Image: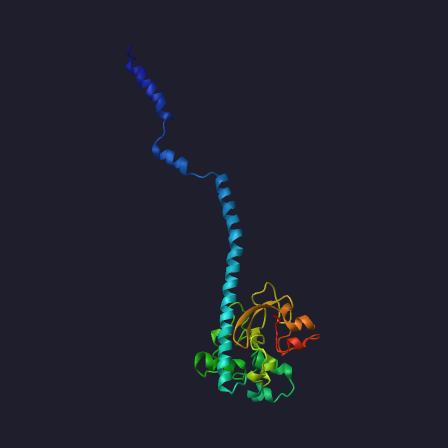
Length: 256
């Protein structure tokens, strides 16, 4: 039986409004609901919270490695200086101003070993080592990048170097007077730049890079130094300042 044409037309007109075009289907498929957006944001936030500390630790490790490389380079320059001066280490006696302050250990410590000058051109271990780093005698006003730790942000307090030179060696000691070159500190970080929080060279909790007389660098916990073990606290300035059974550690800053 054949349906009337008018009936077919009316049926088609009723069905047509319910059909969708391919364009409208794509729009519905690609649209995000508010709940979906919130879920995506939460996932991104969680991933960021997980990865940010990882990136921070990686950056800290990179700075620590660069700092160790700088200290090794500084130690090599001191070794070259020592060769040129008959095995004598850089000494504060090379500075007339420091030599004019007899028995003033604090003055020598700040001006020569920490290289914090009161006037431009003051002699320090930095000014004596720089010519062996860049092969130019430009003085301490042209500090080498090898003298600075990338994690040390206080250029006001430490304008020339981030590292401190051993005061005992600065007293005019010779290489053959060092009984244990592999275990006597030559330079160390003035502050524990790579330890969380503020920690000084006298803080048992601190960890820092230390370069030894033989020019190798180690990551050392200051509580493991011999002076911290037998004395009142870490003190790398002398050949040994500890108490108790110190004889076996004479000339050794870290018990190995």
